[in-house]
Image (cartoon, rainbow, N blue to C red):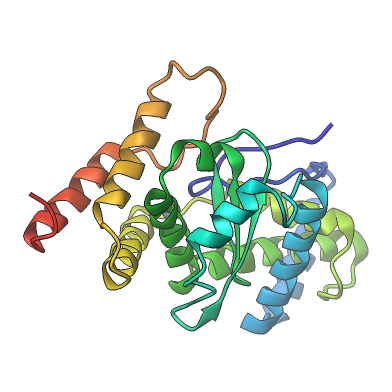
Length: 257
Ligand SMILES: [Zn+2]
C-alpha cells in the first residue's frame, strides 16, 4: 500500500517509509553538528541528491504512461515550456486522486491527476508557474539543502563518519520526510505568486488563471469534498487573500476589470 502525504507548498507527495527519529544520543548530536559544520554542500550536490530523491518518488508512485490521456494533456499544455527561465524542466503526471503538484530543485515538475481534474489548462500553468517560481527563486534548493544537512547530522550520529556520500534508502526517506514538512515563508509564497503572474503574462496567458486557481483551492479547503484534499492547504492558508492580491495587480496592469 502506498502512502501519500499531503503537506508542503501546494503540497509534496512522497511514499517513503518514515524513519524512526528517536535513536539520538545528545553527546553524539554534538559530534554530528561539528561534522556537518565542516561539510560543504555545493549547489550541484544538492541538485544531484534531489534528482535521486525524485527518481525514487517516481518509482514509488503511479506515473502516467506516455500514451495516457493525462500525460498527453500535460505535454500539450507545457509544449512551449520545456525550458523556463533557462532551467530545463521535466514533467510527469502521478495518477493519484489528490489535488496536488510540486516542483524540485533539479527541474522536475510532478502534477497529480486530482489537480488536473479540477483545473483548466491555464490554471494548471498558473499552479506549475508558482511551483517553478520556488525553484527559480532557490526556495526549493535551500529547503533540500537543509534536509540534507539534517540527514548528514543523523548519518554522523549513527555512523560516526560525518561525511555525505551516496544517500542510502533510509537517508532518502529522511530527506523526503523533511521536505514534506518544510514550508515556505509568506514572503517566499508571494514571490512565487509574482513569478507565476509574470510567467503567465509574458507568455500571453490570462493572469487571472492564477487567481481562479487559488479560488478553487480555497473552495476545496472549505470542506464538502470529503477527504480528497486532506491537508493540501495547510501551508497555503491564505488562498483567498492571495487570489485577491492577484486580482488587484491584474486590474492595475489593465489585465482585468
Ligand atoms: Zn508555494
